[in-house]
Image (cartoon, rainbow, N blue to C red; front, side, top):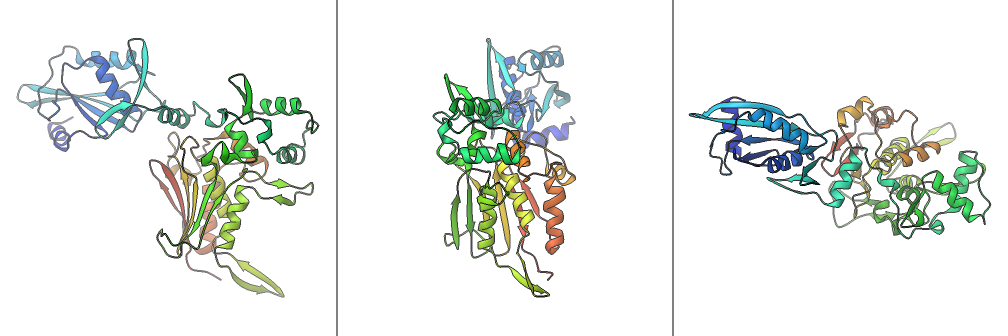
Amino acid sequence: MNKADLLELIRNGEDSTLEFKRDDVQNYDLAKALVAFLNLEGGTVLLGVEDDGRISGTSRERLDEWVAELCRVKIEPPVVPLLSWARDAEPGRDVFAIRVTRGPDKPYARVHGGHKTYYIRVSNTSREASREELERMYQASGRLRYGLKPAPGASLETFDLRRLRDYLTHVLNAPVPAEDDLGGWETLLRNIELMTVSAGQLVATIDGLLLFGITPNRYVPQSGIRAICFPGTEPDYATRADEGLRGPMVPLGAADRSLVEAGLVDRAWDFVRRNTTPTARLEGARRIDRWEYPESVIREAVVNALLHRDYSIAGTDVMLSIFSDRLEIQSPGRLPNTVTVDGMKLGVRYSRNQTLVNVMRDYGYVDARGMGVRNKIIPGMIAHNGTEPDLIAEDYRFTVRLWKGRSTV
C-alpha cells in the first residue's frame, strides 16, 4: 500500500470496511475485528493508527507472522489475510494493513478462552451477532437448511392431507397410507423431511407447512404474499387493491389434473389478472386477450420469490406491487453465497430452500434446468413488449421489476 492510498483511507475514517488499531492490540481483539469483516463484505485493519487517525506506527517484531498465526488459531474457519506495508507513513513510522475479503464459509467465529463468538460489522463497530443473524449466515452459506427447522406445536393435523395425497398419488405416482393410518402418515412425512422430532414430539418442518399446511401463516407468519395495486407510479396510501395472499404453496388438483383449489402461485397470477387490463384482437371468430404482463413471466418471478426468499427474516411477506407503469416482485433476503445479478443473467443456478424447489419442480412450476431468469423472465419480457426487466439486489431484498412498455399488438 502506498502512502497516498493510506492517507486517503485514514482521512475518510473508520466505517463498515475499515478499522484503526494500535500496535499493542491483543490478538483476540484483532481477531474480533477481522471476523466481523469476514461476516459482512470484507474489510481492512490498519495496524499502527490511533482511533482519531493519528499514525503511531508499529514496533512489534515479526508482525506478519504474528498476524498470520492469529488468523489460523483465533479465527474459525482459518483464513489467509492479505498483508501489506505502508513504510514511513510518518517519518520513521510504518503502518501495517491487514485485509480480508468477504468470507465464503460464513459464519466465522473468534476463538478465545475456549469459546467461539460470532461478530458482525455495523457501521464502524463490531458487535456479537444475534441468533437470527447467525441463522441467516448459516443459511446463506448453505450450511443450514432453515426449512428443516421444526415448527413447535404443528402436529400432523396442521397438514392438508388432501394436498399431500394428491401430490403423492397423482404427481409422484406413489402409494399412500390409509386415511386413518396416522402413524403411517407420520412415518412417511418424516422420511421425506416434512416432519421432524423436536423435544420428543413429531412436528411439521417449516418446509412442510409452507408446501402443504392448512394455515401455514399461523406458524410461519412470513409465508404469504402481500399483493397491492397502486393507481400511480409510486407507493401511496390510496390503493386500487390490497390483499394478503395466504395458504399452502402447492395447488390441489383432481385426478384429471384440473385445478380444484389454487396454491399461492396461481393466486398471485389471479391477482395480476384482476388488476391489469388486457388488450384483445380477433383471430377468425376467436377473441385473443393479451395481458399487460405475460403469464409465464409472472409465474416464474413469483415462484422464484417464494422458493428463494430468506424465510428466517420474520415480519415481511413477498411483495407483489402493480403500478401504472410497472410490476415489481420483491423477495426478502439478499442473494445467497456468491450469486450476483450478472451471474443470474448468465444462468447461474442456486437454491436457498432445496425441498421447496424439489416439490415445486414435481408440479412443473420449476424448470428442470433452474435457469428461469435467463430462459423465461428476460426473453419473455423482450418478446412481449421489447423491455428488459430490472434485477435489483440489495442487502435485505431482491426485486424483479417488469416494465409495462408499449404494446406491440
